[in-house]
Length: 286
Image (cartoon, rainbow, N blue to C red; front, side):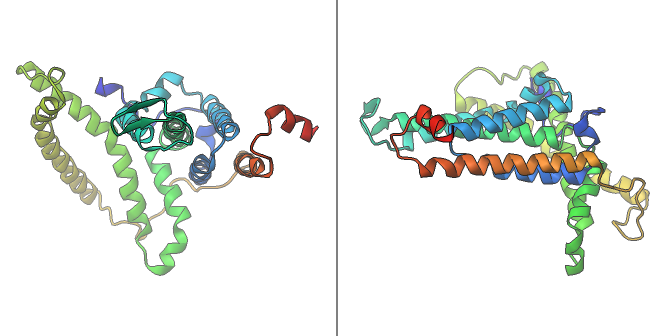
């Protein structure tokens, strides 16, 4: 069900992650994204997995909610895996060879780690940001981090507000899509049977009213903001002042150790011969 998708939603709570300063969570998310793309060894991916699980446990969010956030990217994961399987060239004999199609072990391994990398990326960033940070706090955090750009006359507040509104409207659009699909099904529409082309054509009656509804909601939001005399950041005060606490420092140190561990696991294997075993590496450190 489309309504099960949790991407972009905020789940209020009193966990350690919820109490972090939004600026800290934004910085941690950036560090996590860098670490995900730097990881290139099984040990580094294991460290990423441990860090992600610890973050989810600290956020006190159920794993069912976390895994629901992966639903929108299932087809992207499948497409990414297929591309890597068929386009990656190996050094040995192919496992499957048919016409111009050659599937190697390296392709399967690469497809697995690429898909796993995307899953870890979605879970980690969603847990640190959208699931545990309110839209208002997220806007204040982005605006505070981008404050130096104001010296260059960049509309930082408007930029932060647009990003937050875009994230906030994802659940709204998902709910609207569900309503339109139910209305079309009650009129006899079928979205599950037939081939891929037929299913794509069946989505046209959904896309048109969805676009119309989106523009209507955007216009209503703009009107509501104007009626409340919203004028951007001109003479605007903050209800809650952002301030770093001790817990933010602890998580910052955790992030430094985390990215340092990933970098170490990326660099260390380069100093060993290609045929060295894990046992030999263990004895080397002992």
